[in-house]
Image 1 (spheres, helix red, strand yellow):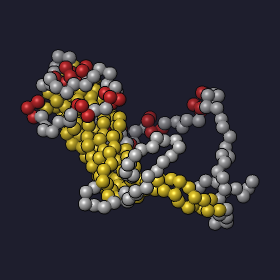
Image 2 (image 1 turned 90 degrees about the vertical axis):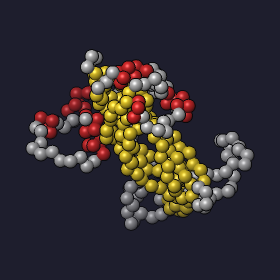
Image 3 (image 1 turned 45 degrees about the vertical axis):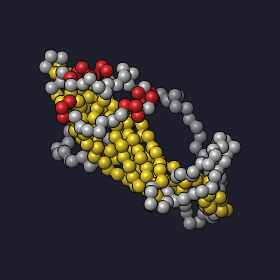
Image 4 (image 1 turned 180 degrees about the vertical axis):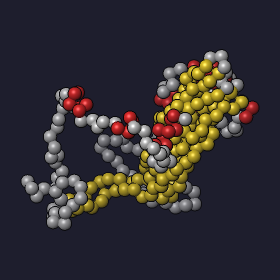
Length: 271
């Protein structure tokens, strides 16, 4: 079937077969941010608290975005707009240095809140589906979606408890599955020194609503490529196809500033 239209750029000669009504989510508003999250308190696990108390220096090794909790509410006096509250949970790994014990691995949790205002339109119809439970007097709010990457570690520092910031995070608001990511348990009190981390976070936030949209259709989309088993390849043949890492053996003559997220993240993990 040489005349079949494949996914991708469409040739002008391709003919539209029909107009199709599809049910999907329409994006009403979106934004992107490059946030500098300054001095987030690190809540260490139980095994790390003693190492931090004895530390004279500290170094960050990696950061992982564990979860983003999202809440949507109507904005007062601003018809059609909604506030999107996002709570980011991060797992930080690093090393604490002391005179007596040398270096010790530490792990802890950082939490950060973010709020944006986006347009999400209005919808008062009640939707009932056979594959979901019915809800009475439900308000149709738009759905918020957050796309985010693991942040970049910009700074980490030690501080005495006397320098503690006001407005500390309430441990009761940490979900159980986040606590489960720290098997040794987290420490919120009894510390003599605290760790503060500064992160660089890239994120995109959007508001969506269910919509019925009319789109042009060319044909049914059937896969053209056959399935291949992933375990049957010869490992020696796979190794032969890997390009020789010339740059690893011959360092460059000059070094450029980090301009991409991956370069900056890799460099931040080494500092």
